[in-house]
Length: 304
Ligand SMILES: O=C(O)/C=C(\C=C(/O)C(=O)O)C(=O)O
Image (cartoon, rainbow, N blue to C red; front, side, top):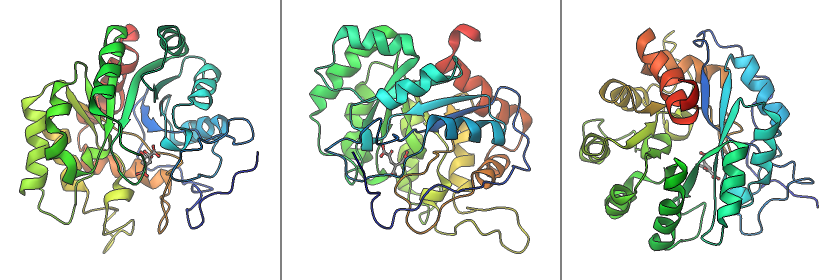
């Protein structure tokens, strides 16, 4: 079956630069995707966008070029609850990738066990309205209660404005909870303003809640251009990410978000994204936790 990419959506950056920042040994890209290829792994009929194909081979070539050792592959909404492309990539990775899947309440215990054996360690609940239709909270809580005994966690993706309404559900989840992209703060608002303070409160009051400090390219208004020689691309996102890294150094993760779905105006150079890291994690110790210790604890605890 032929799939046409959503018109206007950019392809991933064809030839990313080698980062100037040298990643620590064992670094983990804790948020990335594989898409299709559509001919082998068709996209979901209910999807809200159609991406360009982005294969496991291309993902792992990027891993090696940037200097990562491992990946956490996260199911994207364009594949719905068909995790076969993700599982195929996990099996191909020789244990160097873990997965976070999307499942429905109809998933069987046998299927969950098979996913676990393939390297899956979490489920993803997406609340971004442009990406998914509404799923009843009781269905999601039922899924969370079913995956908790496997030692899995729940990854959540939401808009900052929706946090108040989702607060009770998030704080009742029975597992570790990992927030994608800092809960998508509006970086034109003050980093110590009420909106981001609410997110800080969520993490401060709930030690089972972690955050990815990723996706400056999705959140930034200032964009990738360094200013006056400053190397600080996406400088308006730095205060938000750095605050989380410094306040919660043991509960933060970082990922490229390759192949960066749904970007229309600007496609980041993945090498530049890696060079963003020292601006938000300014010490070797913080970088080690962010890129190695924390993701290893969550995804490869048996090796820690
Ligand atoms: O890839 C991301 O993490 C961000 C996006 C897409 C998805 O998460 C998805 O389709 O599952 C987005 O903001 O459009």
